[in-house]
Image: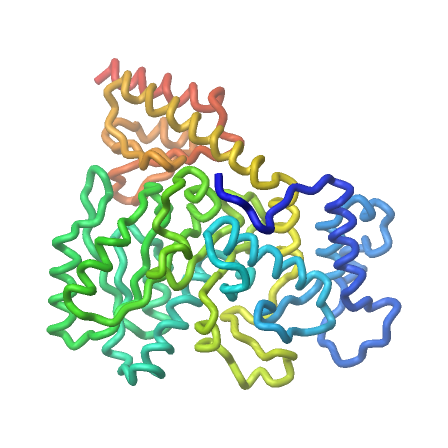
Length: 416
């Protein structure tokens, strides 16, 4: 196991001390005279908890009530000093994620806690669109997003919002691997259409299949064609999982081809919804700077603008509670559950797909009745014409909850 530089496990007492100390460094609307900030604590007529004694044992809820605004990008230096205490915890989250999870060098990454993976993906694509326009004098029509057909639908949102083209590469039906020949075909077609610059989005576990893209398939084809590109890794699902199940990942900052990464803490990290992470190498985030935000100390480099500091505190608390060894154990258990289910499916001769380092198992739709899918909450790849149904091995999905699935599939196979 690699040497960790920042990530530590803290006791419950230590976590409370850290968070409450951070809150104390923030603005206090009750005791301080602050007249120019368009914010306050949560409305006490609706949320009458500000001085509730129970909050002394609830650091996350206390942060939520105190309502810090983490607008801006704190890894750059200057930020709104009113919320410097909890901003420091967000900077710790960014550095732990970059260095100890994604193998970056210390202090080499900028980033912020976003509203989720969709925003973080848009942030990356926004940055690279602007990079190509400013540094390469690219026309809008000369820039395109390149990704697999299994990529998240946020690629379509990004293409629409940022007004650039989207090129999707075909994958093999059975193992969800990228068709290398189709990358070359799509690049050739794109070049003939006048596209010269590519924003490549590589998947670190897709949302439907848990499949992982081969980054070299893209880079070989792009270099062969002598094309300009930037690579973003969409780890919205896999960012808190795959680095712990695959020791030799190519989808992190140890790989010089990777410029940015999306993580999504409200999936595998079980943070409150609206909690994602955007990370990029130093020297890139300024392409998203909104200089017109002159009334904000440090200006704004993010897509979302104002955002809740409580979300950053939630991630910090989760990582600090488990620690790196506890997190590895958590992923190890989920891996074992996934292996158990695969063994049971093999016994029933049911066809399925699972990446060996993933906790998502997708079963071919022909083996799953509509009644069983509805009863057990299986999710299809397409609600109108499903070809696959997926099972996601989350913390609550234990063997006892998987047994009814195995029994239901067994009955269906006996009937057929």
